[in-house]
Length: 288
Image (cartoon, rainbow, N blue to C red; front, top):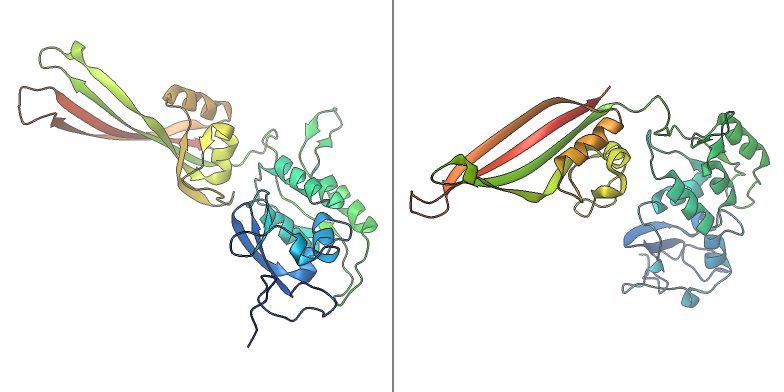
């Protein structure tokens, strides 16, 4: 039976020369990761290498449950960890967080990874985020072999990510919905009083929603959703439908369908009181 490890490990199979256990638990910005000690020290002179090979466990920050704590982006750290496992990076088809991932790579002092993620200058002197094959070959040739119990590994970075500025934008659907209510006076319709709720919902592929709405997208109800997954829990930080339509049109989307439902009720038991109408409407946009 594996004994409980005082350094927040799961087993004691690590080299006796290391004060760290073989299995390490991390809390990165609230996201919990479990990995091997050898993975964290895979790249010499990196931040994690210095933390887990040059320092003692007692010198590192911990959370309330004893996990080693890093105050960084918990979602993007999954790509940092994937890279450390075999020095091979694979990003989703559309990955709008490349600049932020480069910033994380710089923080963790992963110079080769940061170099690949940096924007490239095209022939017409414009910046593009596309990762070129020549860059992968250059880094593979310059990678330093690792010496250890594992066989030597070389760096190979591959990505199929596409920049939104390229012509080959990803096709897909985005559904925008809102719920509104209004009252109609007893005498004439000009007494109508409209009230629109504050939230405009956004449903669709996470990467497409982030591409179109960017920082105006509220992700609090579905945080850290992977770019290749779908969600129905995003909503916008503003309540103007026309503003959402303008953004969708700007990114090449056009409306293909819409639907609406409504209900009517009285504000009290008195049938002479104003009627309250409530409706829910969805607009489906497509980019081919």
